Image (tube, rainbow, N blue to C red; front, side, top):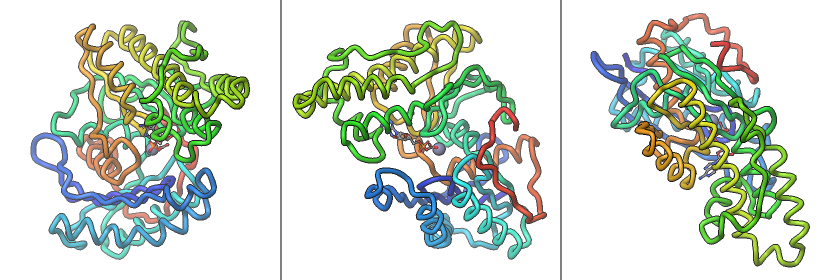
Length: 342
Ligand code: KG4
Ligand code: ZN
């Protein structure tokens, strides 16, 4: 089965082709991505209407590119998958509309995929994929969740953020320091020149006894610290960035270890944009090595949004019998869509 996947939930247009196999995980044949980061940079964040319009411009050329690269013809596609939610309504509608139009034109069924399930299953795109069951730490710009994953479609929420997401904490703190958008990678780069223990920043809910997170207070603490520094901020920016990153990573690692202890599972998967963070990887690797726990990450370039994870999640859902694709092309998108509802 050949699956064409389309991702358009936010500010990246991603298209990919995966092929299911008799045994083992579906294989990624080709994927292509267009990031809108440069376009939104001038505004300091994603402008939804501009995002939708750009997805319209990019999606078909990207589809042509991946088909060419994979050596397959459009007519060979068996299922067209797209991100159904969560995400920006207008942006989602572009992917859903194009997928359903392609499906109708080719007389092939379509499948709407949950964006977070795409992230969750993205480590299956790597050469050494995980085995079920595992704990998943989903850390993106909009979500921070710990899940117990027993199989495709079997997701139990263990804890989540009660306010800002981890990626949001990176982005908002970076904005306060004048680092632009998206803040995560920029803050992380600057942090490499600073000291993580330079400023004492809060680690909210670290000892709450549950697996929930809270990052809204951190941004306020960063703002207070920046104001306190005044003219000195410029000279101490790397230290402030390093201390912010240390606080976020510390909470993520400790809560993930608590989730592993609570479930007794010996495997963890990290997914979502923040999963690209170097310090998070270092500290989680070290903590897990001490407890003989295996950590899986998606390949670095597949941590942030992409079409490969959408095609992969669709292929895995179809293979596992969790879902069948439909030839009813009356799509709806779900800008808000809790993963536990799947
Ligand atoms: O998963 P993703 O691409 O999009 C959403 O579904 O939200 O995640 C984007 C988030 C942004 O907040 C971005 O700042 C953050 O991931 N991010 C990082 C890094 N790379 C991306 N945060 C920290 N360190 C990074 N290296
Ligand atoms: Zn995402």
